[in-house]
Amino acid sequence: DAGVTQSPTHLIKTRGQHVTLRCSPISGHKSVSWYQQVLGQGPQFIFQYYEKEERGRGNFPDRFSARQFPNYSSELNVNALLLGDSALYLCASSGRTYEQYFGPGTRLTVT
Amino acid sequence: QKEVEQDPGPLSVPEGAIVSLNCTYSNSAFQYFMWYRQYSRKGPELLMYTYSSGNKEDGRFTAQVDKSSKYISLFIRDSQPSDSATYLCAMREGAGNKLTFGGGTRVLVKP
Image (tube, rainbow over all chains, first blue to last red):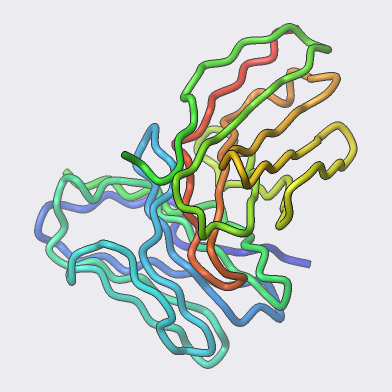
């Protein structure tokens, strides 16, 4: 079975731009969570979605938003990019056992 | 003070040695505990998942949880160079809640 997939793998943006990151969960998983991992640190929780509804939000500014689609895939949007938004963005999906499985991540570089 | 503390390392051991990793936490509401392995520029891979105090063994890996001391450990027996990675502890309050991560410990197993 395919694991969690994320796209794109890597992208470079300029300060002030907008970015959209995409995630497809493991087949059968209905919950998707997003995390930000700055180099040298552990992942920080951004959002959790279950059945298209937001179930949790971390301590991130309103420039960060997300949504989940009927097929349980998800998008993370970040507006007005700052240099400090440069990080690895991870998507995790979970099913009935609540164990979270991570995708390979999208590496965002803001210049 | 961070909710989850983890020594960043690096921890260098010879091949075949036992690797000992640990995390301390301050939130007594944490009930579920996980260990993830993360290779450079990759997403975290779930290694162990526990929800009660005591030991859990899976192959070369043993996870220990001591809720009274707010302390968890991961032991890797017969370590191999392929075990060289960053190991992240993670925990959460409820079954479907967000994960709170430690900062990760970098491990290097030398042939």
